[in-house]
Amino acid sequence: MAALPERDGRLVDNIVHFARALRKAGLKVGTSQVESAVSAVAAAGFSRREDYYFALRATLVTRPEHLEVFHQVFGMFWRDPEFLERMVRSMLPLMQTMAQAEQPPEAAYKRASEALLEPEQTRADPPEREELEIDAQLSWSASEVLRARDFEQMSAAEQADATALIRTLRLPVEPLLTRRFQAARDGRRPDARAMLRRSLRRGGEIDRLSLKKPRHRAPDLVAICDISGSMSAYGRMMMHFLHALTWAPESGWGRVHGFTFGTRLTNISRALALKDPDLALEALGRDAPDWQGGTRIGEALRVFNRDWSRRVLGQGAVVLLITDGLERGDLTCLQAEAARLARSCRRLIWLNPLLRFDGFAPEAAGIKVLLPLVDSFHACHSLDSLADLGRAFATGGDKRRYLKFLE
Image 1: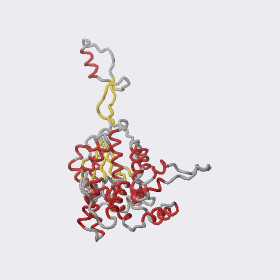
Image 2: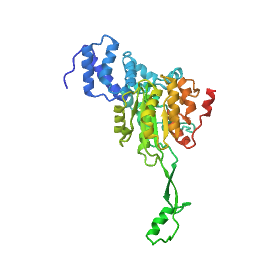
Image 3: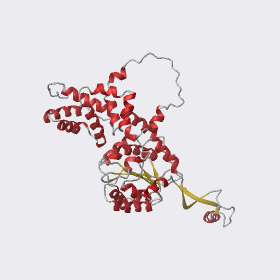
Image 4: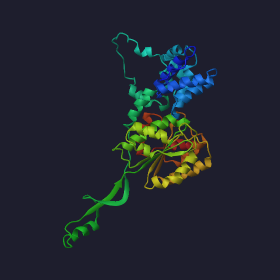
C-alpha cells in the first residue's frame, strides 16, 4: 500500500478510527477505501464540515442502504473530542430510559452508538461473582426481547440474530382445489377413461371400478415490497423472509415471485432463486438500485399490472403488498391500479409497519385509498408480527377495526 499523506495533528488516525467504527456498525470498509478516504480529504481539504463529510461518504460507503448508518456515525464521531465519555454515560440504564422517553431513536442510531463504545469496556475484567436470588417470574429472555423489537431499532448483531430467526418462520397456506382429477382408491367419482383403457388389454372386460378425486396444487406467492427511505430496514428483513419461503420445502407455496419498488419497479425473482442467502441478497442489491429513494406506489402498481400481472397472477396467486402507504404521487392512479390488482389475484394482503404504533389511524391519503381494496391488513415491523401473520394468514385476518376510521 502506498504511503499515506502526512498531515499535522491526528487526521489519519481519526479517519482510521472512524473506519473501524463503521465496520462495527455493519459496513464493509476495506483498507483500500481507508487509503482513498485519506487521499480524498488531503486533496479536497477539510476546512468545511460539508466537504469533509462528502469526501468520506464517497470513499467509505458502497451501498445506498448504508448511507443512514454512515450519517449517524459521522454525526456522533465528529461532534466533539469528549463524545466517547458522554456516550458511556448515556448508556447507563437510567439515562437510557430517560432518553427513550423524550424521543424515539432515529433509524440506525443504535447501531452507530454501539460501534462507538469504548472497546476497553468489553475487555474489562468481570467483577467477582456473587450468589444472588432473582425472581424471574416477570423477566423476559433475550430471545423474547429480540422478537418484540422493531427492525429499524435493531443493532447490527441483533439484525444478524433476527435474520437467523426469520428463516425458521413459515407462512401456512391451504392448497388450491383444481378442475383436474387424479386416480385414487378413496375417490368418490368413477374414472371411465381409466376403466376403458384397462378393458382394452382384457378384451373389453371391465374387471373393477376405477375411482378418481380432485387434484390440489400449491398456490403461488407474489410479493411487492416498498424499499423507499421509510421502508428500507423493513424491506431488508422482508427479503430474508421471502427467501426463506422460496427455499423452505415445507412452506406449502408453489412459485415465489418478488418485486421491489421505490421510484421504479424491479423484478427480483431471479435473485430470490439463489439458494445461498448472502448471494441472494447481494444480487438483490445489484438488481434494485433505488433503495432508500422516493415512493411512487401507484406508478409501480401500474407497471406491474401492465407488464407482469398476466405472467405471475394467472393461477390464483396470493399477493403481499409490503408498504407504509405513504404515497407521493397521483392518488387517482393508485386507486385504479390497486383495484385492478385486487381483481387479478386470489387474495391481496397488505403488510404495513406503521401498525406498530398503538394509536395508529389511517389518516394518510394513500392509506385511505388502499385499505378498502385489500383483503386483510397486518403489521410487519418485528419477529412477533411476522409470527402473528403466519397464525392469522389461514383465517384471512380482520381489517374491520381500521375500516371504521374511513366512514
